[in-house]
Length: 354
Image (cartoon, rainbow, N blue to C red):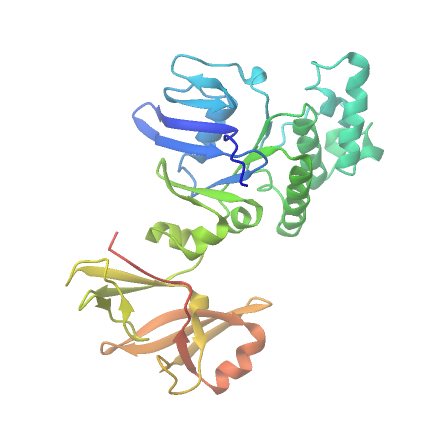
């Protein structure tokens, strides 16, 4: 028997503007208990504004935000940020430079008896691996250690919901990869629902149970990382999560022509213009003269470690088309010896023109 539970957070009809600029447009969104949701999208799409509205750092102009059974924000109701039971980790960590790590983590524990505050703070420092540094000041820590303290401080009051505003963007690449794994493990172990803002598609795919992809104030698509990557519903969604080869096309007999053969397009009107989007990894090595295989010319090869990006040329409709493919680097010798390719079953999309 499947037991359905009500969502922890419900956002209905949320719209917001700054002056004449419409920042959010009728946003509807839900968050389940224990779920990690990533708000992803390009800079200026409205994701940080949405996070600040949930936190209470901006006043709701239209729509409502409910946490559990209670409305925490609407045009008629504004629960103060400190009364919402929501924790937040900021991009710059926002630690108090004059307070020790223990006192930083203790800062939000005023609801506890005084004697319990350092005990809870010490427990959180232990969980993030910094118990031995309890008396240090934040400025003597590395960026990664400061991020851990910011997370410990946000989790110490045991909030119902944790918000993270691009928490890894100020860290170098190697440290960012390690800390996001550590953070995800800690959040899952705590069972706390969380929403994280990021403009990094790889980070969203790694961290999220579900992703809400935003663009120009709208939510374009919501789904699991696999759903959004494998089944994008717009060209923007397809291109945000990976490189894309674009080919213009026209519908004929419910199909569109490509250098690799026809693709189904029955959902578009006859003779309509279309665009074919092909992920680089969808172009795969093939045996000569196998179904759909075409010969190619290799222009450039860029090794990225385990994978390599290959610029290729294909003759099509009387001209050379320059495309990009991606393949495991160990296949490079095979590529140079056998330059035939075909399309795989995944990573190929047909859309109407934007």
